[in-house]
Length: 171
Image (cartoon, rainbow, N blue to C red; front, top):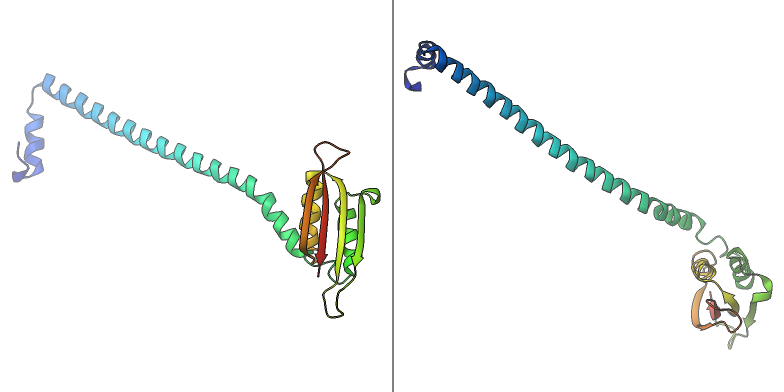
């Protein structure tokens, strides 16, 4: 069978096959077509599963990142809200906003060595939880615009798993 003389000659020869040979030929063609369709279906199914997995991973990433992005946006919007207030008042509002009660907090203005020196204050907070500590340090920088000159962190004598914090802050 040669395609050189045209496909019609090949088809003409196939029609002259015996009945059992024609049945075998049709079975082979139907089987080949079924295998081709099955292979296409399997390939598309595998690609669909890979795509579904990628979409699911992207969704998980979004679920993880979205709250962090929202917090960053909130911080950018609230940045410097307390910068216009005196440092003592700003530090006190930040500490109260972090959940630190007055009995665990002491804030005092430090005397300036020269009139041109930046205003500094000392902050002492006792028995802080990790959440309170992180929130207060973040908000002192972001909302109040205060920078840390020095810091000392020590375990609280009166409470397990809590810390005492001594800060010297300036603006």
